Image 1 (cartoon, rainbow, N blue to C red):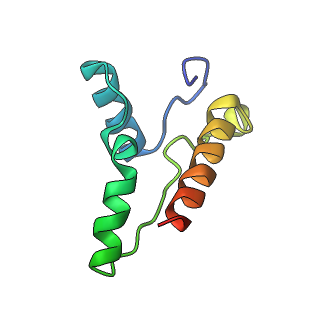
Image 2 (cartoon, rainbow, N blue to C red):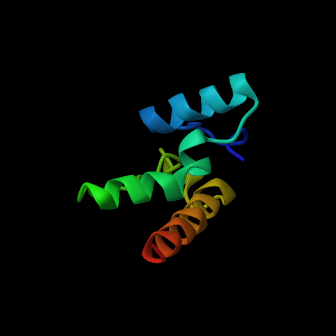
Image 3 (cartoon, rainbow, N blue to C red):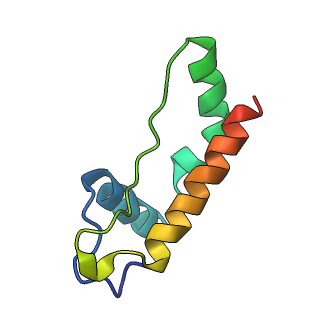
Length: 84
């Protein structure tokens, strides 16, 4: 989704995770284990901040499919978190 971007992935964490996923041919391990991570955090009263690793780095890349797809996923993760 980010291949056509002028500025690519500008988030340091997003870039690191994207490279990890590509080199290991796997989904983001934090995404795969999100529910378990939330349960552990809740047990220890830890808060999480869900960042936007695919935020656009320029107006040229704003409102692209990568950005909106990530926002939808963040919304779904937040709804799942509320179900704990």
